Length: 358
Image (cartoon, rainbow, N blue to C red; front, side, top):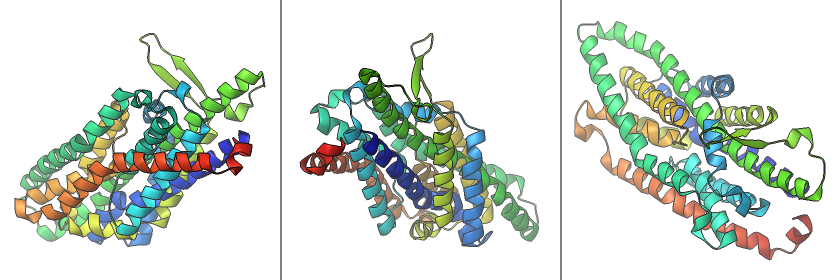
């Protein structure tokens, strides 16, 4: 059982790394497309703020992800299948240049493997899943509305400004806004992997307790219940530090296929519009993921924000065909991830070697 725990932890870090370069476009697409920074300095900038998020955010999202399924009804095979499925879907969508949600991929994989293991959907925490599904639609809408309002306010405020000077200032401000969005990206997405590793640790700790074996300090994950009945996750520091480091490293690797879609295919973006889109995305991320503890997608958030700034020109400035394709990919992510995870779970149980490991 210890061996499979180590495999899960390693694969979780691999997923976090992939998440970084898969979602790097969310943080840097606008500053690259507006030529504020070249691609490599842009990913270094984003990666720095991804890592800094560790010292700013608590583990609300990790706590939510760990509760995706009933922990007493799963084993390490379930968690392994969920992570493998999430990696497969993330790599496939990255290769196709589709900005899908790593967050929903991970949650869908976790849930799908749990259903395959128990044979019932009752194992899924409906509150977590329904909130997550709801924000597939709400996150881009919120980002869109905030971006639209911010763009209108900025354009009205700067209506008499010298265009050349204003453009220079907005290019500088894009560094601030993209940094804020990268901070939200790191704080939100790294925690999802923290939640999955913590779920695996809880299963392992429960196993050690039943055997009467002393629990090593490095795997000592626990849950406490407060006065109102809410569960709170307590994890050793190495887990979040490692997860934030992995996503920062992944961001440095970049995801140039998706940068093109986010930065130019949805709508053309100027430095002013880049500031509005990134600021709107950051506000949405901070409010939903950190305020409500809901695992919201950075991809959905920034895509909606870019559409919002495009709409201030005219509705036709947004390429709605591209937006529709993105929406279809977003809707399919959770069910497809669940199906892949279920298949991986059954495959794991068919391979004889696992019987000696599990």
